[in-house]
Image (cartoon, rainbow, N blue to C red; front, top):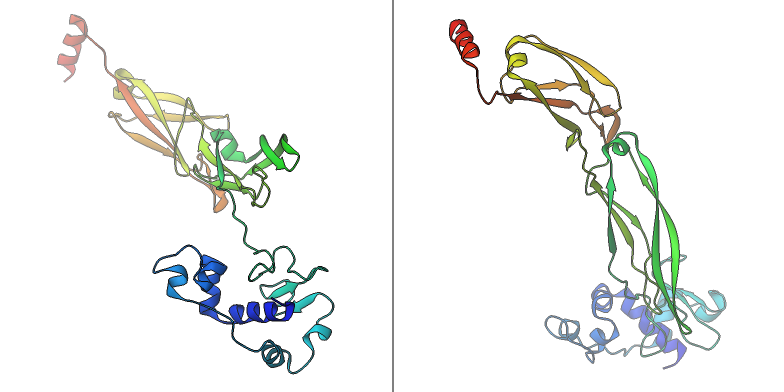
Length: 290
């Protein structure tokens, strides 16, 4: 097929939304009906064959101008704007250049298959979530070429912002294994909360269980409650504390990821420890009291 006919055919497909959609989904085979069938047959049952006059198409688009002289050597803008989807480039040998729409073997299609994303869990402490941090993560990827395969190490800098929740994904596009004629996979780090010995995360709030004796629960007690930023909070209990009672320390939790200047709360839940047994004297004292 001549260059003129090839480009005219490509323009006709790109100018027709239905044909373009079929080409994007099924490729050239979907238009011609000669390739693997999609739902309802190849290209949804369409059989496309270019029957127009290339020069008429160019004349209607370029207003009668010579398209091979006005667009500059080796370049035809078919309505996509500079660098847009309608841009074609011709190499010196007469075929479509890399990344362009080529019909009937005149070139190579622009859409190469991308490998599936590679996910890595990234455990982050609550202290790091509180202040934000950066982590250097080394990955090893395969680089395939005509001369063989080699392993390549690369260090990626992961920036974790204050308050980011478990499940947040940080993506490094096209940093995966490199294979000829395939787009490398994206590398994705997924934030996971690291186990903390003192606190449990609940959204932007954090929760702590504080054990107190039955005596303290009944008579009152002064407590020093540890917080996530390393300081202690003085909490005085004067009233009777029942098992499961909570106290909320405002603004002592994690930053809100959408508004880092606002922090959640530290929720303290009290676990009242009951004695396993009472002496006769203790039993008698309780009976006299109640």
